[in-house]
Image (cartoon, rainbow over all chains, first blue to last red):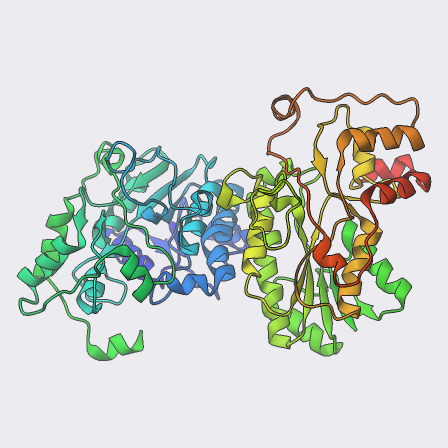
Length: 297
Length: 297
């Protein structure tokens, strides 16, 4: 039995579906059913259902984007750092291992060797490097709170996407933004991501941090070209002239754009396809969201 | 009517006494009576008692010292950053101004001009400068959460002391540590500090940050000499050879040692005596704590 926290969110919903599909029993308590911030309540639930693992997908992401976090610093810090410590305490009290959805957004660029960041590279887009959005700062603090936790998988998600149109889907965002920022990024296909995370538990992969991104990286132009090729041949994409112009015209908080190395994950024997393959497959199987659903979000 | 949060703590107790002495009506709810983290509960209390001001002395300080914060990051972050945001929300909902006990420990050294830090200098001992203890990092985040708050007095306390022996009193600490670290610091005489804070409200001083320290600064050796002169003539004080030796032998987290400029406070017309005068007066009126009380702490 697995306890799944945060199943009502974008990522959490895909975890629920993945566990369902694989026939892994789980319970997904809502926040009203169980106060995620109360270690006693979470420990009690773990014991009640005799869970052997917990997955935390709960966290605070700004809506529609990270700029919103700058206006709600307390909730952002609470959801991305305090909650991590609380859940850690609950799992340690109940003596079960767990997995936490972290983020690759605590990095910017490439590492000193010009390669993707590995799990041993320190975060370089955080409060400690003083160049980050408040959101990234809180996610890095969340990892800092887990630094000495020996019974936790920490999965770094990075810009989720898949074939289902959604305001949270990177491909949907690119199609709807009026102007794009050219940048190079590693990305996580959402269905691939949740499969890999559940595999970490099922295959008893060693605890620790994993960059759970698809192999390789892509630039915004490459993705825009793929979208035009496979989905919207008539659409033209405009780009900001520079990151400075983007920051002046469209953003409040600085953005993380970064390349992550997923070889630690691949070395466990878990498969992760190349990011371009995942993007193409998503575009070929694209499902548009009904217009009324978009309005409701 | 004033709502006083955190009155059971070292600093909070002196606020309660100060309000009592001045005949200012206040209510000091315990955490069991009112959940400080619940803006609705605090707002309700403010309205029930028709309070016109709130003072927050609640926060997380490591015991016996800041090293303890490194081992309890979640509670430290919760008590020094999240709580600040929650109380801000409560006061804004209830539409009353308030005052918050912050700390000068978000600075190290002297400013670029070799003078004391003023309220316009950015914190230089924080997560953002990546040189701090976890405690200082969370206190700086607390101030960051208040950066755009227009109805709050932020009082920076710095190494409290007075004439009453206590494990939290700087003079008591110097007398009991087996070896001292030579450093220069501004300090806050605790009775002076609470008087100044209450004055900020009573005299309707403009909202914003105030370095609520005694005028000037002292070195550890100067304080040790004063203690020997006025209180313990036979005691010899040993010093660490260097901060490196101190860090290796006696500390986990780096310490803030800093000089603060209190002229913004003085310019409001509120009096603050020189730190040496405050130390001498404390030593001349010294009251030893009973031994059993020390054990109980």
